[in-house]
Length: 142
Image (cartoon, rainbow, N blue to C red; front, side, top):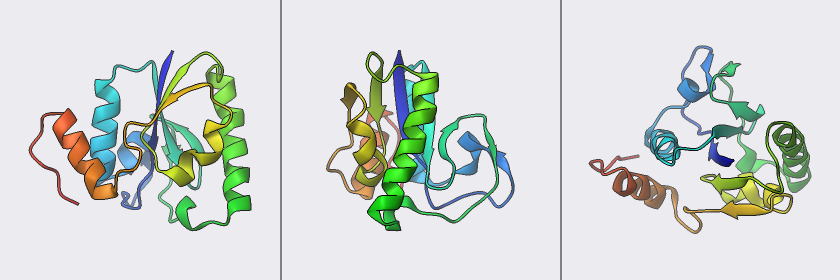
């Protein structure tokens, strides 16, 4: 199976929504549209608060950012994500495409055998440009 993992973003709706609809803004929109263009078997959203989310999971708005958490909390978060991911995928056989930043993928990669990171090394602005070009869209602006 081909699995795409995309990040949550700070910009969110103010009312409960499905995970795929909760996050707004050019970075999430670009990542989500690009993920769908890859025709994956599954898309999961990596949430700083909720961990691993399916597109249709109903969630409440929140303000939590994995990027500012200490390493031990990120490791605990990653362990929980891997536990959920291993129930839904095969960490040794499936292909995982990460569209999430380093803090969201760092402790996941060591347990996943086949992975790629098309946005590796790109700033947030460069990621938005990458998605615009890949999707043949006019430039999205942050």
